[in-house]
Amino acid sequence: MKTLATIAVALSLTALPAAAQNAHAGHGAMTSPAQASGVVTTPADGAMLAGTPDRFTATFPHPMQLKTVSIAPARGAAIPVSVPATAAAARASVALPRLAPGNYTLTWTAQAGNGHDMTGKVRFMVH
Image (tube, rainbow, N blue to C red; front, side):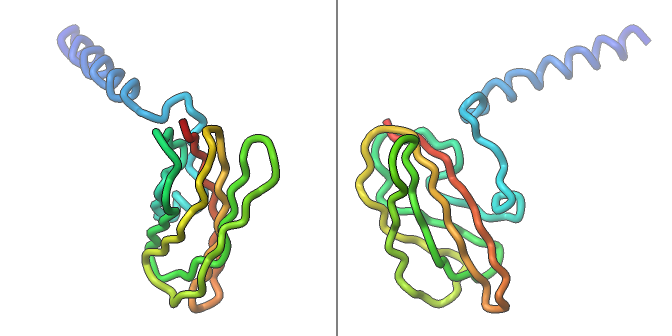
């Protein structure tokens, strides 16, 4: 019984370094409803970027049409991003304006061919 307890303690201690290696731990990264449904974005939520991102890209679990994108700096007015009309696809991408160093929240909306709407927020920092 003592051996079993020792093994359990050893296993629980080996999980600690993995949690400590989470690059977004403590940076406010949270799972949004869009991420929970399988949407992957670049930049990722909680990203800390060395420079301004050139593009916003969303990869969806099924074809969607990106409808709107806006970027809100921590201080100041939201910056609208031009989203050209395209056919629904599993991956959508738009060019982003040059951003000064700071914290930003990018908000996007997309729609499937059947009218299903999806929204998401991506928080990131530009150094």
